[in-house]
Picture (cartoon, one colour):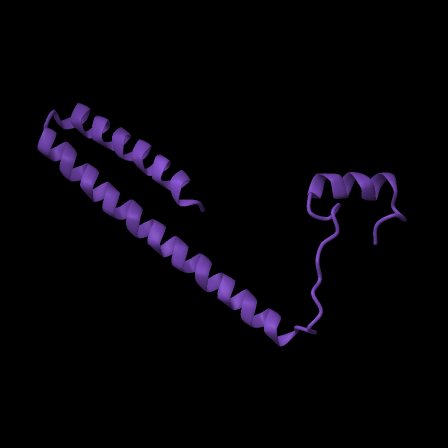
Length: 97
């Protein structure tokens, strides 16, 4: 969840809410109020989502510390891209472990 991507999406959503409420109510103040409320809800949801992701990352790190052997396990160049890895494993099944 990248912040610039969220910012563009939030701006587009708030513009839609602004236009929709203005078309429905005909009031600029009601439109601004609903748009502000939608912005607060979106920002709170983004904050909760980031907290959840950070907490989940911490949980994974804690579990990996318990089973850590000290050796770094780095993926090979073909294991980074799932499509290439799948293609090579199907074409040459004995090549990859």
